[in-house]
Length: 112
Image (cartoon, rainbow, N blue to C red):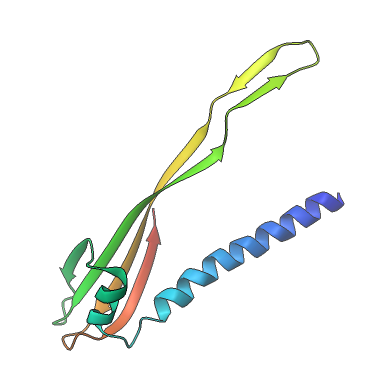
């Protein structure tokens, strides 16, 4: 029971930290210029009009996550079971809203 509690606590801590870090990184760009963002991140994958005279810079990437690797199980009857590797893929989209003066005024982060 103690191991389950420790595992749950560790999971919560990792989840909290993984959610907090991207927010800090994205928030740190508010007030900086589009030129600074380009210098650091390069050009975006896509640009869109923000409807207010500025633009939305969209950076997207595809991430692959291995859920578990292939496994061989040997049960008490001597039978061997093979489990295939499981992979998941998701898209990460980072959007920066830039005003007409080239200043980043907001951001958004989505994982699909």
